Image (cartoon, rainbow, N blue to C red; front, top):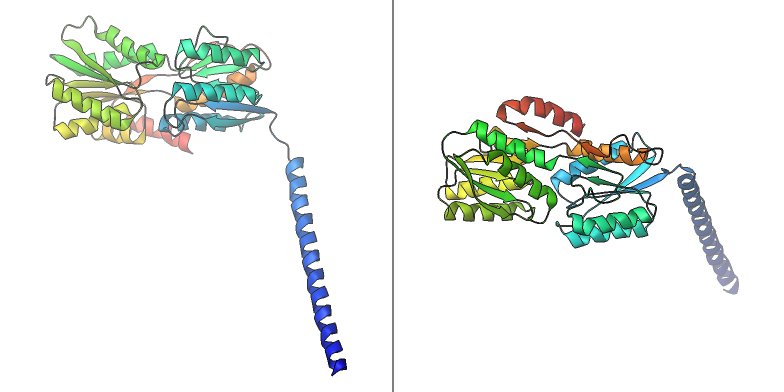
Length: 334
């Protein structure tokens, strides 16, 4: 009996030791594999430069195209581009992101500058810390920024006004939905439009409302204007979601004869243009802005950029222009 117990204990001990040995060996091999992977990661050459791109609103289709252009530049330059932005358009959060980028000691900052008063000090603080800044989409010309890349916003307003004059006849009463009253690029788009039509007696602006860069708010404000001013027979939306909201309001009120100018080539906007619910679209080049901003910021480490102000192309498209636009957008999405 004692002999059997001894044999049993021996077998149990042997099996336990064997299992323990297998476990230790397995753990050791796993550790080796992890260390090998870490070594490979460390050995992999990381980009020399780290830029931060700060947009007006993080998950906005327009700013996603800007981000896509900036990320494309990573294939051509020794740089990693990190994309950030407030959840909703918010000047305080935007400024905080600039300060955080400065505190993180990034190599360069690409940012929209929504207002001169608030953004100039933030940009200059970055410059004083040795971090070059490129403004994109909206400029802060009185700051020490390296360069501006983006639309000539006043000119885009002129183009919208010109399209309205060319496409309409008779008395025209216009409602304007703009992204934000405090944003300088939105102000310039409105002012350019007003200046273009000011000497055309048959056209007048009835009211201007802000959408806060929200499709839903654009719809609500357009709906209110249509209910308040029965004479409105044209709309101009100055930010990417405004045109979509205006069409939704038009369909609620059941107005048939309403001329609409929208901004930016979002997929839904293009579908509405194709369906004759939007009549003209102001086209910007967000992908090009993103790519060019990285290129110019890289240039700043070697020499002064060739142009301090770099205006990207702005144009008006109508339904007849869609085939050319589709070809262009296809190339961007590839």
